[in-house]
Length: 169
Ligand SMILES: CC(C)(COP(=O)(O)OP(=O)(O)OC[C@H]1O[C@@H](n2cnc3c(N)ncnc32)[C@H](O)[C@@H]1OP(=O)(O)O)[C@@H](O)C(=O)NCCC(=O)NCCS
Image 1: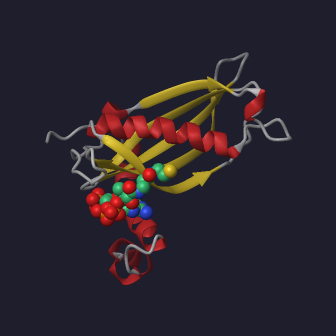
Image 2 (image 1 turned 180 degrees about the vertical axis):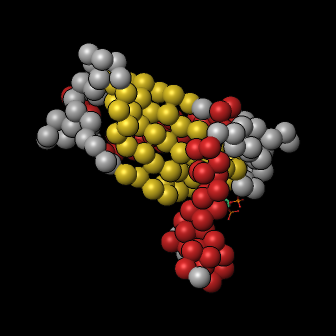
């Protein structure tokens, strides 16, 4: 299987915030943003693996800024690291200013997807070669995040999490 770059999985989705998607403060409902990020990230994971993909975990979400009604929201997702059957996907969320057209970073998230076959069994994915400095940083930290996610899910013993132990020793 030929290795790919994060850029090859890049997926960008732009959409408005409509009244039915807001909370009582007229800002985008958190669950709506989670769904948009999940859709965008799943396409990125599919582009990397060319397989059926399922969301295995939401590792991190930071709702740093509220997103007002009427905003133009852009969700951008890229695979940051591929393991054996799983892929970490980084998602950046931007709001576009109506007058200047400039984009401001609003939120970010990290999801994990697993490539599966038609019966739902995990299947291998291509390796990934990060190119830019940011891609290399995200790639380097991904194993630590994977181990943390597995420990929190009860799928890895804390004393087996080599990357986490290295942080504290
Ligand atoms: C995700 C799923 C396929 C994993 O199946 P599994 O039997 O645990 O398979 P494995 O133990 O072989 O794990 C497969 C990969 O997922 C990774 N993984 C599993 N759970 C994870 C978690 N919580 N966080 C990070 N990675 C995880 C494993 O580390 C492994 O990665 P690797 O092969 O790249 O090393 C399975 O749990 C599933 O189908 N879940 C439901 C998915 C779904 O429906 N999502 C939408 C929810 S509405």
